Length: 298
Image 1 (cartoon, rainbow, N blue to C red):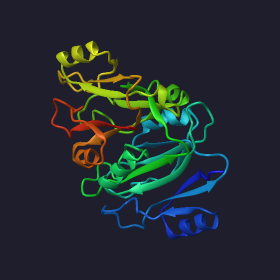
Image 2: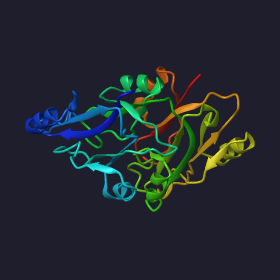
Image 3: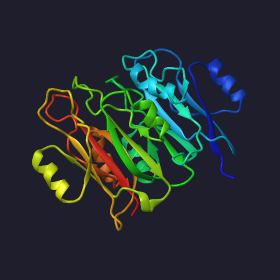
């Protein structure tokens, strides 16, 4: 029987580390505050493995509105700031153990401080949490959590939200939120992409596109794509309407993962063979460009 990830915790001091070791936890030896100006003890992520009661969902939050839907949907919060004592956001890890249709056990977890490592694992079928654990700490390197599941999963459904009203429902229905705002820094609505997984490749989406103009919207519609009706650039005051389009083809390669990227990360993912849609979701604003990328099983 496979060893599942059954428990997660975070240490912020040597005393907490000792306690976790005594309770059978294993440490991921990457300081979550790497490269920051924080003077305190390192922060580490810890996990336990076992044959039952697997963790199946992970999410990150960097503000209170993001947390409300998770709490209401029964997620467990590890109440230790992963970005404590820095100039960045307060970031918390949440998890849930599920056994529904869209729950696949997590069997491995890692922490990366390098885009090339992120991209290599994402291309190999690992799932990456979109939120940088050093979010808004401009002097620190990016840090991401990645997980591997018991079986290869595929993306069969995508959606988006521009408010937090439906978060509880979406989490309960098995959706995973990409925990980074497509309008980051633009002053508009908080817009998030969501997806659901299946272990059946025949149900998977096979292509994604992004439209920035009316002519592109007409083009994708004529090519048989469906679209997510939420404007990913909504509320910014920009005339640019940005939409995500998707298609499922019988002979297409199934999509194994979808991710939101900063522009600086794109070269590493392209080099790893991941498809990067180089159309800025934050179009029309003097903000950091953000791209969607996705991986396919050939």
